Image: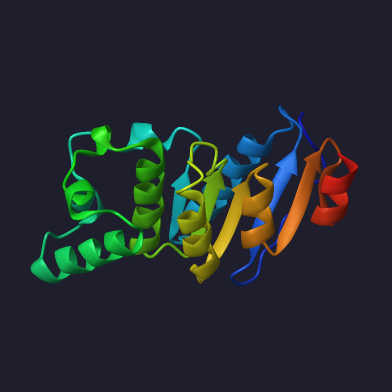
Length: 184
């Protein structure tokens, strides 16, 4: 058993980050949360630590984000990619040829454009370049749904999340992030 007395209730569009030691069960907890979301029919997006396995490397960015291929949808997708600082050339480059940061931005974009109500993110910024980070943080700040993430990225946590929870053997505990970070 990794932890006991686990209880997490979220109402509304909260942005919650879960921290904890390596091996504490953070990813296992996220998987349980995903099962609950699926069981309750809540529209969600999931970004695992190795999200690139879930991307077809032969599709270009526009094809990856498009669901119908209709002209109006393709226009909206290109406009959205432009807002994420994709050049026209990058929009039509195969996903497998994009940088790690570009693939991360593309994956985030898919979850948001798919109209997920809840985003479940496992170490989402670990492969981002310093140039991609601000765009991702801004997109997640503007996201109007709920975000539940595991992260150790101080800037990401500070700029995006309302609440920080710490997972240990005794369960989840709310922490004052600034106080917590000054003590480690």
